[in-house]
Length: 94
Image 1 (cartoon, rainbow, N blue to C red):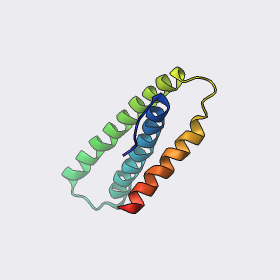
Image 2 (cartoon, one colour; image 1 turned 45 degrees about the horizontal axis):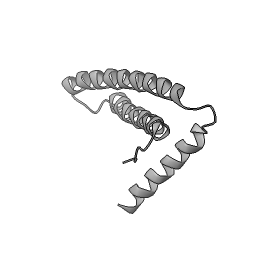
Image 3 (cartoon, rainbow, N blue to C red; image 1 turned 180 degrees about the vertical axis):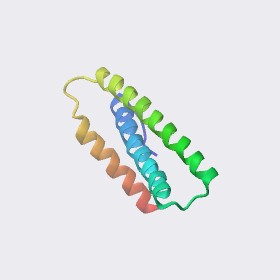
Image 4 (tube, one colour; image 1 turned 60 degrees about the vertical axis):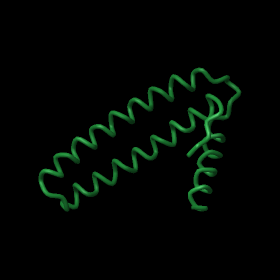
């Protein structure tokens, strides 16, 4: 879990969430392409992918509006990298 202390951390956390959503979406797409699910589960999978796309769009809007609130001197990219490294370190220690 990312500790959110300010708008910058929040924007980075949203960006990380989008990465996760894209990974989840790709897993569903790969399962569909592999044809490993019965028809009823494939139909549900289509709904899941649609919902994930919807969430990605919402998160993108939230990031855009949040970043607009940040001062111009904020280095968003380096902070995003820092949060990803912290997150990865926590996951490796588990």
